[in-house]
Image 1 (spheres, rainbow, N blue to C red):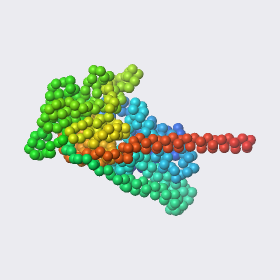
Image 2: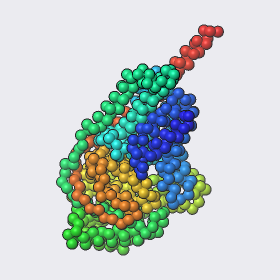
Image 3: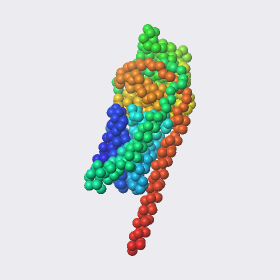
Image 4: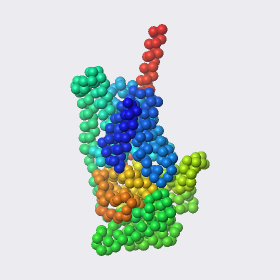
Length: 526
């Protein structure tokens, strides 16, 4: 029975995320997980957690196996499931503490879940925050909480609601057993504690609805996203790099023609996606000339996603490069969080032979990128743009740093040509949360889709199709103020994670005392 509940928990969590978008299933999944591991031994809890994690992550991350061998995808999924296994062990270990104070169960579920996500977002090799509960809540009434405590608070609130569901179901089931299966009698007997738990859910929802929405306080700017598309999907997009660059140049020049005919608004700035120029436009005169022609035609600065090589660095940089009309290359942001095993090999002397054994020649596609060390704040015309590249949008600190350093709107440059539509929508959900979290209108620019604009309420406008060429243009408002989430930064997560450690410490003390009492009773009896 517990195994079924754990497997169903994984399925519920999966369907809460894009492309399914059944956000209400996230707390249901948490509840099933909490019930499955309650009163189990820690090692059993770990096994049940691993089952939940695998059922959840293997299909959620299936886009990682579209163009490569299945081994990296399954290893990534298993590594993430290991954290859910640790969560299962921890939740099982807290069972005596929960039994002593049953109404606190939702709180322990929430802090444990946030603690697990905090750890998973940092280790190993910088972590992998994909699949955090908060990223399933873009359409949820809990989303406004992001403006107070960011993704950790939204995850915590989602898990808290799940903990309430678990506590209510558990109490009613136990009471029904004592009343010989009479659920009505059980409900009457548990009316007060169940009512208190449900009131907690109502309080969370009311608090979320009461969060004031910070409106942008700056002037309007007109922004164009150029989704140039690629000749074909797949890992060989690098072999197509001239065609990809030509697509983005041509789409920008066509926009300039539409502007000239009065069919589109003149943009103040243009955003191209990650990898829109994998030919180094600084080192290659032909590529530079093409981009200069596009910038001159549209008469606006272009944020180009480019690969730039620096002989003094350990490898090439994945950058957002400002290209000005008339003058060419200017400010540049280098990606600070290259993806391990995709953009670089950590611990290369040890890891490369293993990776080659698992994937064969696929390991040669790992880019060996160097990491930047400065937040992505770039001046494009009238706007200070906070730039993050691809998976960086999942990392709380990287996005916040750009806002703290003065970003007035957020841009996520990404290349989804090696993945699929599900991955693109999962990434867009993160952009939606970031817009609310920092009170910044935002955009996502992708080579193949999904691209679009996001308001400070998390709503998407002008979303493009997948594997198509499109150039949406929209007027956004700049913002200079800070939300509470921007101001407090990592503190909500730190406090919640500390609560998890405190719960484990309290459970350890309680278990030790119980063991001491058992030993004392046995000694007296002898």
